[in-house]
Length: 225
Length: 225
Image (cartoon, rainbow over all chains, first blue to last red; front, side):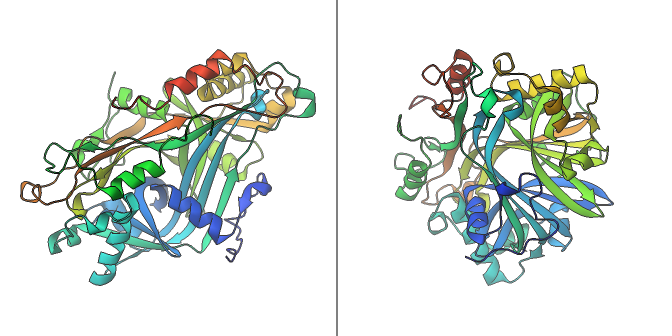
């Protein structure tokens, strides 16, 4: 896939070898995380809010309530900075200075546009619903006009974007490697647990296959894997 | 514990029953998450960066490289918005409209101050190091003057803060509860995996107790728990 143009804002300056500018890396990180941290400015003051997202090709879909004052600000085309972060591990070094974390993060600069067209909005809602569990859209009652009106979806083009990734073991200098401390990585993963049925669900006994599948895909690896 | 004063910026307007303003709730969420998303404004443009944090009583410590341009901006006392989010579950309803996520989030408005005093800085570094693994500071080589200089720690008072929490089952309206879809929650937890020693560690065979303890504390619950 093609690389994003590196701009003054997206260039990774500190530890530049951690910077990645290809769409594939950026898209994979976006797809691995459920929630964006969306930053914007009102009256010269910074705001950051967590927003459920999904990716639709080369744009990010952000989901919110039409009544939300902050979402209306995002939808109005004001400048945004979206940060998406996955945490992958504790990096434990022999020196305090080299303690770190493994992570993957994406930053997107741009602006949002409200999705107004009814058909496009339904399609975007399907993508967001399927982001939670692939296939979920085919199982649930679709929105009625009142619900559609109460929901806003904002699309942000993923064009001015970059990723930053740290992975692998700690990096202690040669002269510290004999220091008598344990050094290594404690991996961190996101684990989906056993589904808990709502009291009112009448099909509690049978968790459908598409929900079983997503739980299995995020389950802990077997010991020793 | 006392409540934070509710300001125009920290009041939870959408779904106000999700808003929490007590220090205990805010502190617990901060302590459960490794990374803050820190928002600020440069030339009227929003920026958000992920930063490793730890809590020192009623202030948030943010850790970064002294050479980082963005960290210097944070350290300079410019207005900040810090957002800290934990993801707890997929909320699967019978209607697309009621799909949601369980989460805990904190937002802090304020400004940072660089910790300059050498003794206070060492104490703050100990807190940040122990945030990864409690007790880790006692096992690693402490920073030398050059490393201390290369590290910046910024303290942000946790005073203008609020939390927003969604937990529990989906909420479908009575007329939707008979719809033939599975409804319930798929819990999400952060799982710490088996420690992976660095190739150069000479004590690879014995993962120390303090590291074993943190892995155990974040391990997956037994099936059925």
